[in-house]
Image (tube, rainbow, N blue to C red; front, top):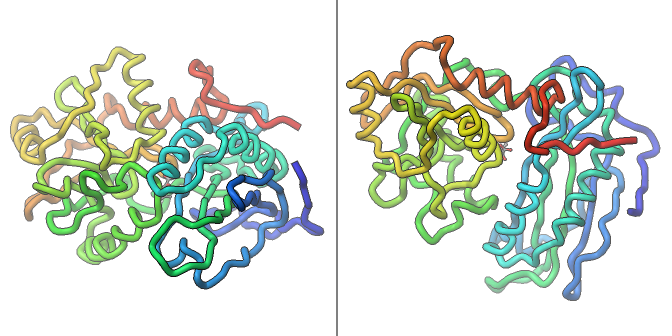
Length: 354
Ligand code: COI
C-alpha cells in the first residue's frame, strides 16, 4: 500500500490523560476512490481535509455510510489488537448495498484498517476501556443535482483515541421511551449504518436531554409499543432468568457488541431470546418483580447499565445494582478479551504487528 507519512507527528500534543470521545484524530488516514466503475488501491496519507464539490451527492441527499470499530492495547504485552473487524466489513457491505454504493472488497477494507492502525499504533491508549476508535466512511463525491446514485465515491478511514462513550455520564442511564418521533420504519434504512439514521435522532435526543433524560429508547415506528434501540446502542433486558433483546428485522442496527453479548451469554448457558419486546411487558415485569436488569450495548459504549425508563409519563425502575448483574460481568469479559487479558476463544482479535 502506498504510504505517505506525516512530516511531524502530532502525538506529543495529544492529551492522553483527559481523553474524551472523538475529538482527537491521529496522524494518518486511508483514502480510496471509486471512479469509472472501479475502486482504486487504498493509500495512506496525513489526516487532512478532503476536497469536495459543494454539489457532492453525499452532502445533499445523504448517500453515505460509515462504520465504527476499535483497536485496544494489550494490558500485559502492550500489543495492539483490532476487535471483530470482519463483522464491520460485512456490515459495511450491507450498508453500501442499501445505499446503492458500489461494494468494496472486504479484504481491501480489512487490510487498509490493519495497515493504518499498525502505522498509528502509538496512538492506541493504554488505559483499560480506552481504545483507538476506527471510523471508516464512504461518501458520494459526484457533483450532481438529480436524485440518483453517484458515479464516484471516496472511502476515508481515520482513527481517534477515545474513552468510553458514556464515561462522563452517570453510571446508570435514564431513558425516555420515545412516543412521538421515530428512528426507523419497516422498509427503511434502520439496519444500515448511514448518516440519516443518526440525523433524524438529533432533535428528539436534544429534547429528551433537555427534559433530564440521558438517552432515548427508540420504539417501533408503527405502534410505538415495541422496543428497538437505546440511543446509539442495542438494548437487552433480563426477565427472570432469560435475557431478551429485540430481534433484528430491518429497523435495528445489527450491532457487533450485541452479537458478542449474545455469544458470551449463550456460552455461559444463560438463556437468550431475540424477539419482539412490548413496552407493556416491561411494565408488567417491573410490577411482578421479574424485570431484573437492562443494559445497552455498542462499540463506542461497550455495555452500559440502564437504571430507569420513562414510558408514557411513568418510570419503569430497574432494581438496584447487585453482585449477580450480568452487565458488569459482560463488561469485564468483553474488555478482558479486547485487552488480551482473557483467552480469545472466538478469534475476535487481530493483532497488529510491527
Ligand atoms: C458506535 O458505537 O461505534 C457508533 O457508531 C455509535 C456512535 C454514536 C459513536
